[in-house]
Length: 299
Image 1: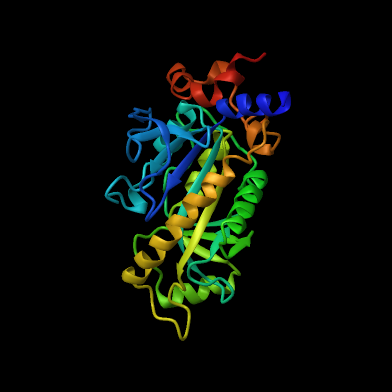
Image 2: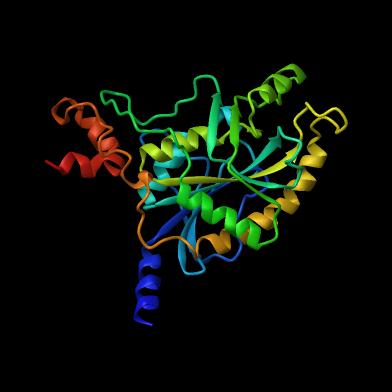
């Protein structure tokens, strides 16, 4: 009983960020709800954060594309979104996304928890370390293994056809692939294709936030010989079904997070900052205080 009480107290201090993708613009079931608007050194996040409690766990929800889906993948302010999560005290981020399947075995409607990424974007800002500071985080394994396992188990528990691991190819968009591109990407052995998750994963690692994705396949891109090409109508229909599954899986997952983070994500900056403290501009120190502050105070 004492152990259960300690866990509940500990989890009450845990904060989970949920970044909703296409189709997921709100989280039902939140209690003690507040709307929080944040300014960041990198500009405005996609929208206000909805902060509350889900199954007793603190949640910060952000619609990735803004309410009404008004921000294109290429125009998303990823740095502001992740910085805002860090400023709120988020330790775990669950990204929810619609993707195309690049494998015959991953059918539209299936859930995928990728563990690798390939970057095909073109010049999106994807680091906090500029303006007089250099940092190199390890990114060999870009997804938190602990969170990924929990999300996979939660997906199976709610009845999803779930696939553990796989490679997410992140393209620039907002256009879908040409047929030639789609066939080329297939030769790379990728599993799914999307437009948003890689910058989030990079920035979350720099901010020492655990990150994993719940990706729902909505189509076969345009490589499949018998399936039709990407249709927005079909995508929206599958998204409506997938959104319900995602919400149920998240509700289960937040209850299964460990009391302490012992993964590499939690200490990603420990040896990553290269610039000496005295050489970091004061403005940069102030701007990045939520991210690097504890390392500037250490000896």
